[in-house]
Image (cartoon, rainbow, N blue to C red; front, side):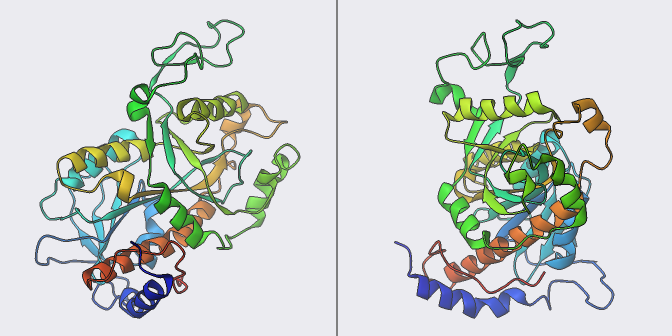
Length: 375
């Protein structure tokens, strides 16, 4: 039974001064120095912020901040862990791609320095956006993660002329072959996150006004005629992820992505963002949960993807030219959106742990509005 909105709001507001102080997090406001520090083991993170490369991590490290550096030689991302002692928030850089992400999260989960059994995990990374759904600079909270690459594949030049794609589902002989995949066939191809938690995160952040800029306006202008939502300013939304190591692009590929996502979720999911690491992180967390090291990702894993580019070119540009265009991505806007939208959720989850530790009910009436985050 959830506590009342008023009760949680009162407790959360009372906790907020504790959450905004960084006096003991190892960060010096005067010189920005980072220090290594040991504490009584194990560390017990309330929230683990997951990023995949340094550009995604920088805002979290500098602004949260994650001032204490903890050595992490097992990381496939080649970076230390970040730690905020007062908030008990950890930051990790996994390295790009599904293999590095799975390796890093697995290594972190088995690191004896950390007790992660109560931790929330928030992945905040950039991605490619479907222009049929949103524009560049937008931020999407996912409920479904769908594997893009567990399939048969025939080069379309060798496939029957009436095939819409060369990708063929496992145990089928034609694209999107009937029947729709059974629960057993879906297996690790689809991972459904905690829909209630994702909806709460969306409700908490949906009214954030994301930055707009001439660079974003230039990038989206050619799409406005064909895709209404692509021509609008960035927004926070709910949308699902197609995940795989292949950095694909093009109109035909975008059509495949929409159909593949619908096929494997029986029309429950809508392709919104293309990413690389989300599903394998979920699988690594599932393995760790079976070992008793973390809670299931179906309970405590949030995925936030912010768009740095579109997955298909404007109608007057071919896919090869689009690939060669150095200006097709606006990463800085996506980095900014990931922190602006992710930080209020991370702070709120950290506050909920303080509520739990004070023997109150756990998080949360799913409508609590926490104080503004200074960004």
